[in-house]
Image 1 (cartoon, helix red, strand yellow):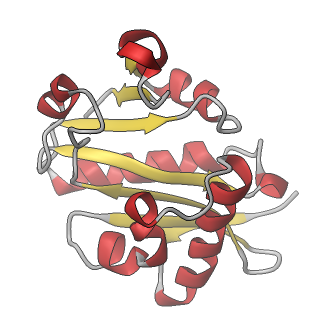
Image 2 (tube, one colour):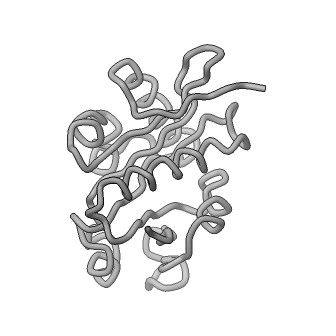
Length: 178
């Protein structure tokens, strides 16, 4: 059985974390790198490592030292547009811990890594003390995402059903907090 260490990303982890994230947008989402959506992937340090209320966690495979999974948190709520205006109002920036980039390489899935990383993000948010809610969005075609988020939170907006034309197809969740 493989062993993993969950930790805040160090300088030595950044390239591996970036690779996990880029692999996910190419392989799992099929979008590839889109600068407007993925600038944080290219520069995770300025988005998640440097800001004091943000974090980037990694799961490192102890056997070979590679980054197997990532998870990030920042204080930016969902923007309108493209998200519904009421969603941006419900989860304002500065008060909302948004979970982002929870990705696990296929060879390391089904081992609880995403859940452990999310637990670490929630601990980080609680320690910060300034967040009043935890929010995230996902897409139903993302491997394992819907079952994970349904187990950890509740759907607050399913664009496929609630937004004219299906919106972007995103499903928005709130995670119970604190």
